Length: 252
Length: 270
Image 1 (cartoon, rainbow over the protein chains, first blue to last red):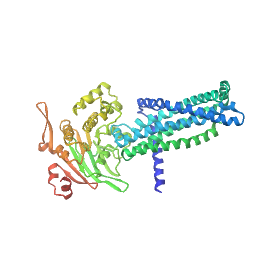
Image 2 (cartoon, each protein chain N blue to C red; image 1 turned 90 degrees about the vertical axis):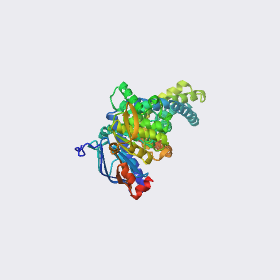
Image 3 (cartoon, rainbow over the protein chains, first blue to last red; image 1 turned 30 degrees about the vertical axis):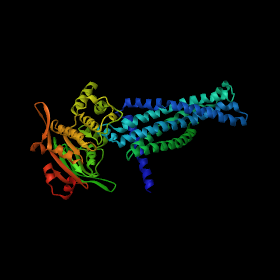
Image 4 (tube, rainbow over the protein chains, first blue to last red; image 1 turned 45 degrees about the vertical axis):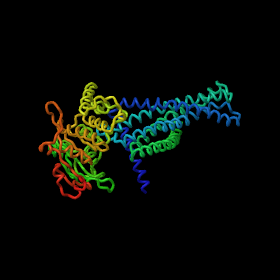
């Protein structure tokens, strides 16, 4: 029972945070400088890891699907498989997971240590709303940057797939790219761009929520960091399923 | 907003109670801090000393009772309106609570940089002024991590001062400092009370510092700042409040506290 009560309380607090974030988005003061800083930290800062993940995912996807397609004598279709999987599923989800690991943990640790060292209380005492100052800029940056990072991951992923197709599977470049274009529908692209908006918002808000609820000194900060990554990763995968389901029902 | 029922007092507590789950922190606590006066709140760890400061800032809400700051009732106020009330309050947190990603200058000027339209040169002038007051002018470009414990507290005092609050709140300003450094912090607290006439509440369990602050005064003599034994009129401005089990166990000036024959007070003071 106490477990249920805690979960309900946690959900209630999370929803309240979401409410405060929306209020912070539409009414002044808005801390523009902090938003720009976070766009840089979350977006530009995650570029390397996203490039690497996207590249290797695209390459391994080409290798694996090449093998399977061979069984049907359809090796030339590899472009279609790589692009569809990358753009619709692996790009958004893997980028979100990588950003969760890199940014989500950082946010939870930073905000958590500000809580335990009373810096959050000090902010409020100095007349600043910590939601507007700390949370809103991170949420804006995460929600804006994740689709962009995802698009980049998709791009290098398909490019990696092209490299493998060309040099390993010996599928001609023109066949591969032709296949990519044919295999992708506009709806797929929409799906690939809508998903990271939702995932980015979710992962940053969860990390902020966990950070703000940190208790118990430095040990608590460690716990919050772990919890933020675990909760946000699970949420990313679960949300991905539900968003996919909704999008298939609505835009296709 | 409620009408001004409390006259000109800086802080008024009326029967304030607060409990976390079933643990009673404050039980009908009442006191009045007049402008230019000082209250030193003593009590064992967990007696609700810091809670009093958090209630004054509106960081916590009481379960019952009313709190007035500069004549405005704040215990039911929304966070948005509280921001205005907090303009009149400065808080020195335990360990300083400096923003560790900002320099000393940015920390001290934080409120003026972020929450006012004051032009940057004016902010810098004010930052230099308050850093000079606490004697740390040459540290303005350091990061908090490069400061010692005592310096960090002094920067925290400077930050609390920057926006010229009428009431200053100190949460354990000397805890964890060596006796010599603690005295330098005590002197800042005395200076602010006697030269700037800021109303203040000091929460501490460091008796030596508490009595030092209560029994000394700062004065300018021939352009020189000096600290000396407080005159009786000056000493009367500072009163002690002793919290015990969420209640006010004692309220009065230093001599009265020292002469009290209450068993708990004797045990606490010895």
